[in-house]
Image (cartoon, rainbow, N blue to C red; front, top):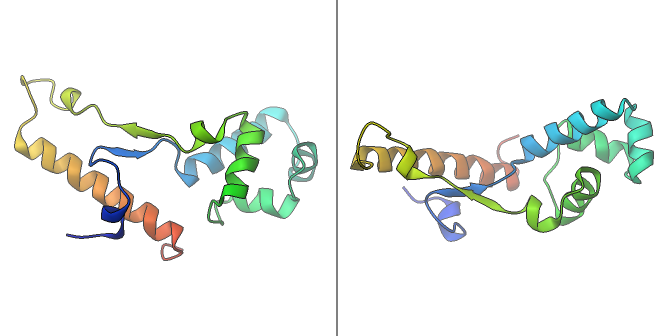
Length: 127
């Protein structure tokens, strides 16, 4: 099954470290920990209040500008925000000496589905 992610992926077992949903949650958590209203929080970080609300509600596509805003708020570099995580397939089946073909196929399918959802979200299909 071909998908758009086939053209841009790095590995079958790699995916973004932070999804847009996770970044949105991290921003909401940061604002809650500071005990500020949306307007106060936006003002503190020099972010338009409407943009902050869109980020928190995950109603936007994350552009370089939004990643920069999130990085500033969360004190993370662009490299940290855009990094990828690789699954440790060796730990997937701890009852055997190695992962059998079915485990590998399951990892591949799960990552393919995850990546398809992310790519559709980025191009505006998953709204």
